[in-house]
Amino acid sequence: MKILSVYDEAFRPYGRVVEGYPLEGILATLEKTPCTDAVVYEPRIEALHQAENAEAVGAALYGGMPFQFGFCNGVNTKLNCLEFHRDSEFNLGTEDFILLVAKQDDIVDGVLDTAKVVAFKAPKGVLVECYATTLHYAPCSAKLGQGFRVLIALPDKTNTDYEGVRQGVNAMDKMLWARNKWLLAHPESSEAAQGAVVALTGVNIDIAADI
Image (cartoon, rainbow, N blue to C red):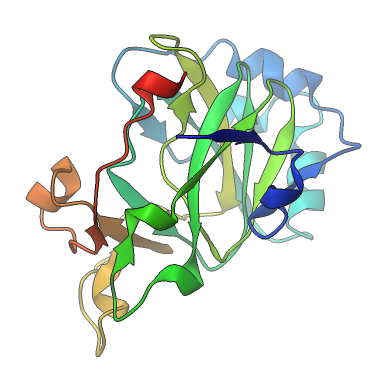
C-alpha cells in the first residue's frame, strides 16, 4: 500500500497539519504513558490535561468547548475497523505514525469497500486534525514492530459508555458503538465478534509489508 505524507496535497480532503501551538509539555507527558504490544486506548488522562499549555491548546482546538485528551498507544499494522465522530479529532505522536483513512461519503448503502482506504504518515511532534467526515481508527506503526504513543483529542466524553448504542431508526444509527462514536467493523475484527456492525467489505488492510 502506498503511504503518503500528511503534508501531501492528497491529505487535504481528510484533514490538515495544525501549526503554531506550544506542544512540548504535552509531548513530554505523552512520552511517559505506557506502550505495549497491544493497542490500548484511554479517552481521558488527567496527566495530559495537567501538562504545560494543555488546557490552552485544547480550548483553542475546540473553540472553548469541553474536550478530553487521551491516548492510543501500542503496536499495530491492521485496519480492522473505521470510525467517525460528529467533530474533528486531533492526533499528536511522540513517534511517527500512520493513519488509515477514508471519507464518510465513501459509505454506500451502509457499507464501505476497504479499497477506498488510503494511508498517510504523520511525523512525530506534528499535530494533525482529522475532519469529522474522515473515517479513521487506531494508528499504525511507522516501522515494523515499533510502538507508537498518540494523543487523541476529542470533545469531552467521546468514546465513553452510552446506553443508546445500536438502537435507532436507520443503518447509521445502528453503527453507534459508544458516545459520539460510529463504528464500521471488518468481519475479521474482534469488534465484529463483540457485535459491532459489519460494514467493511474487501481486504482487512495490513501494512506490515509496506513499512
